[in-house]
Image 1 (tube, one colour):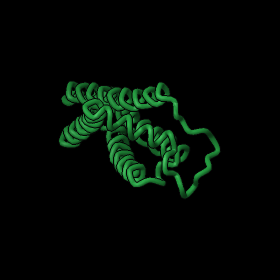
Image 2 (cartoon, helix red, strand yellow):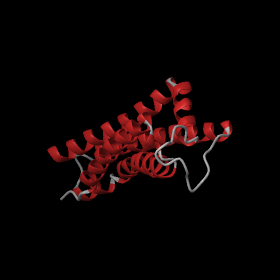
Image 3 (tube, rainbow, N blue to C red):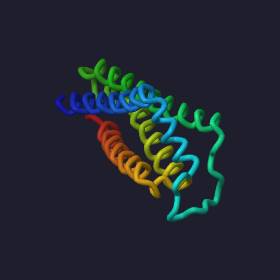
Image 4 (cartoon, rainbow, N blue to C red):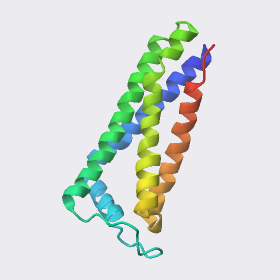
Length: 162
């Protein structure tokens, strides 16, 4: 039973992580936009100044990129919160009931991986080469932490309860 509670708590923390970062981006919208402008505009990319694809310098596309980031963070957080609630509701049920209740928890953790691995590491790091700037490098380091943390939670939560 303690393992079930631990899984629930960890999914709650994934939900909080996602929602807090999304909310911080909304509260600091101008600063978040400025960062995205720098990242997708490939500003200050001096180590690898040439890219195989274009930078984005259109403000509408930049706002759209920021909106995708924020909405994806909120979505992952809300999915994880729903998952934690479902796990809580099934905590006293059979193993089959508890295992069946994991769907949204897994989707929330997976959504967090999409945000911080897919959007930040793959798109931001590999395509836009964010690693070339101090702020971009720090963002990638943070993204790696979130990928590792949510990935571990995902694997743990998804283990079959017996």
